[in-house]
Image: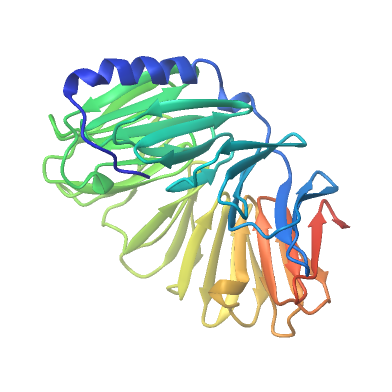
Length: 377
């Protein structure tokens, strides 16, 4: 996210028309992601893994890279920004960007006040003004900080959700994979943009907090402190009292209630995972990953799995989509995927990387193996 020079209010029409031209040309929901990964070998050459094939992209080490669902961006040894897309490498900019990231369906980068989005082989300037952006699976949310305008792209159209959104915006809007939740600065109403429509949920005159996921938003209105969940268009009262903490994922929400019990909401049902307060927890897609009295566990598809009698180090535990990868006490790599837990490799691992469902294992001295769909590369 980049804050750029302030623009005049009248500039919004030009910004909006440019954005509309860009986004009408692509529907992110129609784009399938590719199994991509990247690494350096022991001679510092840069390799890209693409659907079972390994390509030597650069013979000199790159300065940084970002792996997306459809493309891969990197800054090469000469500080040029390059893109790998469908087997081809192109130079996007000869000047190094201030920031850049490859996302599930799009890529975004900024340089000296210019914010650009890459869709496939197309490279568009979104704005030369101040923009914050959240790109998700089926919508893209934009916040123009200089104009206090919140807008969203969904299903081929751009819609302005709110203008005059000021103050601490991090507490006023949040995006999930297919929805946007925000508090109106004008009316103080709590609103959710979902399936192309903006819905007024309830007044937040006394303030409140919320967490957004896919098809779901958990929230607490300070007026009555009840914990409610918006799920697929309906509002469900989950608890009479506010939870100690809560998090949202893909159609699920996990929380610690006021008694310390660990609970999960899934498909309209509320279940108690444990009566014991977890040591930690996080929600990743449809998984709830947590620790309990030193045990490493995961709740997935209505079942609890005990993975280890210890909790892996934070730096050696990765989760993405519906996969967990970690290094055990013997430096072996283990994987949990769709309810199955197993040893991925008995090779001693120095470090691991997870790019969606592709695992890269560094066995030391940049000696890498790639694992994808049950095969080793």
